[in-house]
Length: 444
Image (tube, rainbow, N blue to C red; front, side, top):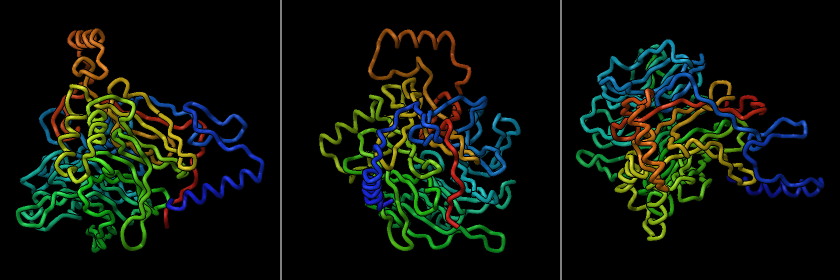
């Protein structure tokens, strides 16, 4: 990845020598028309709604079952569930645990272990386990829910208060895990309220899972981090970092060396909230989520922060309230859509327009075949939120419609960010039409 520029230059020379025209920027909805199979950058992006709405961040087991965390709004806690794609066979995998939040499962590619995030044995907790906040630690269990084991976190419960380990992802070969870490333990530790990024080796000894060779690969520099998916070849991973000005979230790729820190490359440059990212299977494109097309609170704040020159040194104080004001309240809330970055041409095309109707797209991932992209999106019901730019007449109509016909899919959930709010949820399925999925390129 860090040598991409030189490879692109070499490609330009080759194209000129061959007398070929350079490819133009990707056009949404287009496909290869010369008989060749479509590329991800040019293929039509087709989206439909699944018959069943999973919780946020659904992921797949090798057997095709879907794992997710959800609060069903019945007064129970957030727990990890598994179900078939149509919602049948629903089973809670962590309901017997004492924690009030067991969330964000991650399936090892081999299918033998499930990583999840939990507040177990913590007295101080904020947010939701696995999404960022305070109190989350890393646990693993077998697919049947047995052998629940804490694999990372300080040994005594009191020592870990104020820390958080979240957004953990397996490498394609299942040998390593990457996650973001917050050190906010001011009482018994030396917490500095700063984040870093950590990578470790997953091991099983005498039937017990654990982590070894834990190392920090992005420093605790007052920037906020969130880790994302690994590259299909296992040589690095995507991550989000606030960069330049306060709370300006941008996407980066970490090429992971054998020792030392990430060799990082910045991928986005926009005042919008750029987060959540995954490679296409051929590694030529990156799909990411952004608020860049929507004039809500966050985009307005980010523009003002840049104009005022507010620095990322303020992020450890500002990131949580700014996120809550931007996404978790009904007045001028942000919404997001999916975009695709062509790593060769640097062109960006918009893949979805769900954000135009107030939807927020969070985590997303490929199904086991690598052909379908799945995500569960959230929004306030139309009529319960006031969006920008304000159309007063349209807003009044939406409010009246909502009062007369409340949406039956609206339910109380508490796994949406850091506050219990009423939102609608729907699970979306998308695929790139006509694209052939490449053979497995994971590191061996």
